[in-house]
Image 1: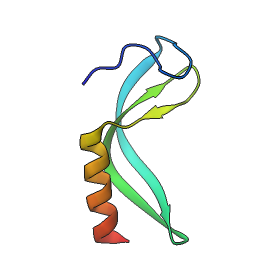
Image 2: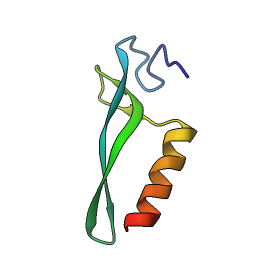
Image 3: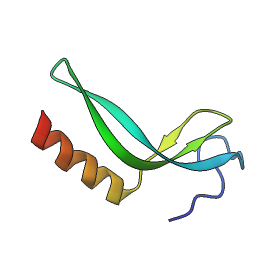
Image 4: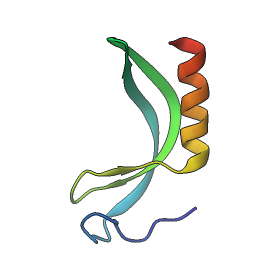
Length: 64
């Protein structure tokens, strides 16, 4: 999937990133490795697509 403009600020400074994402569950920080998402370099907003969210959810259920 490709994101051309930021849905929040309409900037064209959007890039695809694969990085570790931190989530806090029951006061425990869990780091999910190799998550692909889009980030706006203008406003900092992150956008996760369904396949990445499914992978994150499965990882968090296993490690929470």
